[in-house]
Image (cartoon, rainbow, N blue to C red):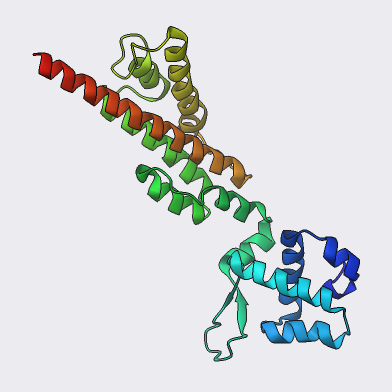
Length: 240
């Protein structure tokens, strides 16, 4: 039987990481259907629990609010202490904390061309988000290289960044040029091509978030490539 919140000793409560304590509090709220923050803490007070324990309870409740697992402003209730479990809170109870931990990895400014991908990820569409991120990289490589639309995936990367490719940097050491080509080819071959042919199940949302972050890195590298190509074209024009 899972230990209930009030059965934890003060020492145990004090030693629990805030995220674990938060989930225990969330389960308690769901099990007891206690959706009033004042009543929740008063419940512990009536049990004559130490103040240090109640402070940890309050801390955990505030953590739940900060992570949008619990929210204030329950519709139809004027009491400011009224709270309710959010959609994300229900999802975390169902699949675990990795959902919000993965989302937090993307709590940053992604490349402009990946804004829509971030929205898909936050909606829980992990496979779609990972695939769309890499597809956006492929689209941009094609735009910058001017390659034929029929050239796809790994072949497009090798053509664009390989020897004589429009996006290859002739000033780099050959090993670096190959490294960049393989970086793009490997990323597209591993994370974009498979979903094009079969269903890819990202059971771990953290893995999907890392794919999106890899696509973000590739986009930023392409920003540098775009500037270099534009500067080169401008220089050639001025020479002409």
